[in-house]
Picture (cartoon, rainbow, N blue to C red):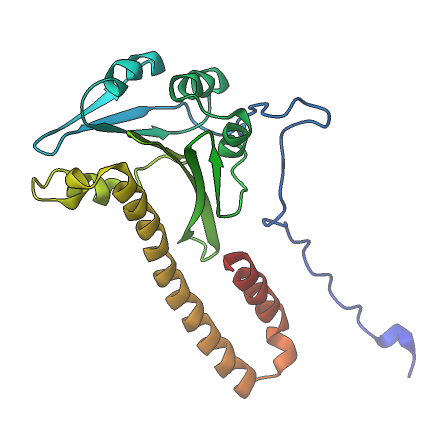
Amino acid sequence: MSLAHLSPEPKRPRRVNRYRIRRRTPPGAAPGTIIPEPMAHAPRITLTHVLPETIEEREVQRPEMIRGWLSQPGWIWCDVDGPGDSQFISEVARVFNLHPLALEDVVNTHQRAKVEEYNGTLFITARIPHIAKNGIIESEQISIFLGPNFLLSFQPRPGDVFACIRKRFRDPGSLLRQLGPQYLAYSLIDLVIDHYFPVLDFLGEKLESLDEEVTHTDARKVLSEIHDLRRELLYLR
């Protein structure tokens, strides 16, 4: 048989590696250099002042305004929505006396889950997963600084993933009012973990579907899907 009669195998489209880590800090830059993501939106601070009997929620325009709340009785939760302004983030860091290396990890939002201590303040990063509209699993980084009388959180994307926690704060009998910023940190981490279960269910359904395809069709036809699923499982892990 002549090779001229064979049809060339169609080329598969080049895949975009969405798992690749892209650091924006140039080589040789000083440790702690803050370079936000180009598409990160401007920061907005929501401050919650907590006493056992009452809470007060307000939006803070300038980080320097937080100092007065830190000196009052009770404790505060400052949630920064969007790390898109390096000067603004640096001002927040000065108010809370945050370590510059931890702050660099806040704006480089590819970090794995971890806990570190800087001068008596715990720095916690976690990844909260979700299923995108195209069915691909993505995740965003949540950063938390936990001090004796404050909790400072950073969420990089528009939309409040902590909305259900804020709703609990408004309940006068909530333990969030009674047990301090440590219990709030626990509640935020618990919320992150809860987001994994719908994703795991989604992957379980995909596995069952692939199992049926492999059983009833040529397994070579679903190798690409199996490869993609394997990468998603590794990413989620």
